[in-house]
Length: 215
Image 1 (cartoon, helix red, strand yellow):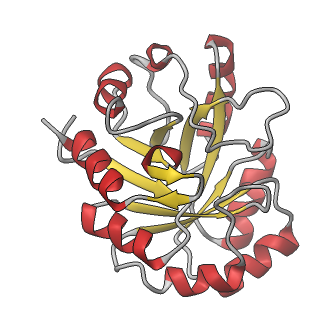
Image 2: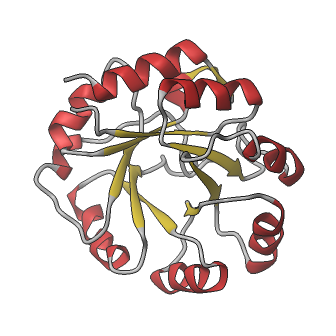
Image 3: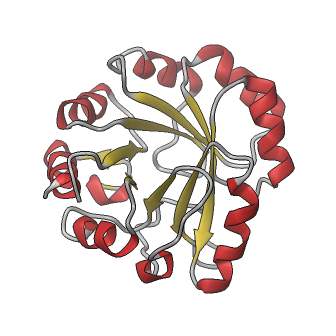
């Protein structure tokens, strides 16, 4: 752990949450565009929120198998710094999105066991960043944000061709251990800083970021 650990607070839905993340030192903020999620934002609301994000904090849009029409509308209205693809998008689709929108692309990859790591190398050569998340349970409504962790030891000593973030079940109580076991330099948290689904808690955000950066 160090002061250099970068934290992404994902699933922000209101100005208070954005301010809490910024004040606590988040380096990324994430907005969710997926109607099944309790963190879903309409484009107009997201545009207003994005305008409140201080300069220097990366604004990330989380989408799930979005087509060009949806991404066109999103990128036209919301000032974004990165697109996060959190569905079953192929390596080719990642490349298409990068080329079409000229924005860095982060690809989320679900992990439950060692065999799930093999696909990471394929995406690492195309995506600008990777998000290594807990694989959702079968028949889960959400591809992420389920508050689940995986065996972090699976990532110990792993090196990929692009930067990556650790996600899945992280809280102020376990984030230091997760960083220690995986060597992650970046972490992504959503449900772990919520008082209820979709409702961020400023104190939990501050505690999480402090824990991630403790020496």
